[in-house]
Image 1 (tube, rainbow, N blue to C red):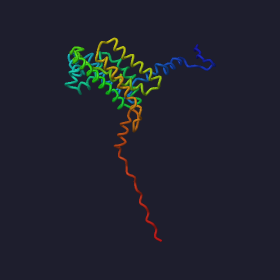
Image 2: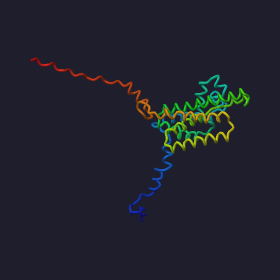
Image 3: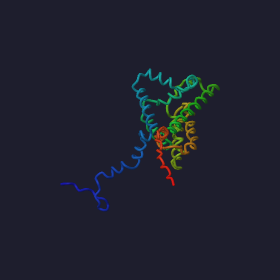
Image 4: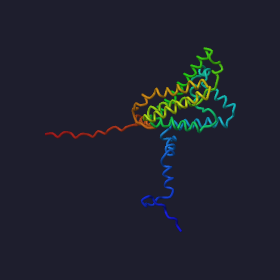
Length: 263
């Protein structure tokens, strides 16, 4: 015998498992799924994550000697910043610390991706680069001064310095300025807790300086990011603007005017 369909409070039939489907379409799970970068909404964040996935796979499955050589070449330690600054600044952001990629996926999804959806891929990439460069230069510069004053040993100038944490913290700081007052407080509280956790649990002097510096760099960009950029908006706004400039527009056809009649 067929089982009767459940009914609601007013006697209206309700589809089986409707509550479960409703729970999957709303609430925290839906919000979390919406943060996943997509090619249309987050071209920069998604492309960056693919690059990080490649270097993480190389770290885990590649030749350890080759990986060590590539990471050493990419390091933004004091000596490499003096000898090969551009290469170090560019390549150091292509690696994650350790062989696990998923935590960095969610770090990008919750900071870089929402910032990109609000300001576009070019400006989001600019914020990430600004945090990475400013955090690196300030931290290594202060460490070099500490070495010159004899506060720390010179071996710190050769310690491996790679990762994306400066760019992520800068994007989190910049994103806070685009949220509501409540969201801004939550974002900045989370950022401060992350920085304090690193400072208290890790004795790394470089990141202890670089992390708050990168966060402040993102906060300093609130005003320019709040300005509405000219031209088409959205992830592919710059491409649409370029296409509209390069498009060949047909000339307006001028119809011949009839000659005036003689009187």
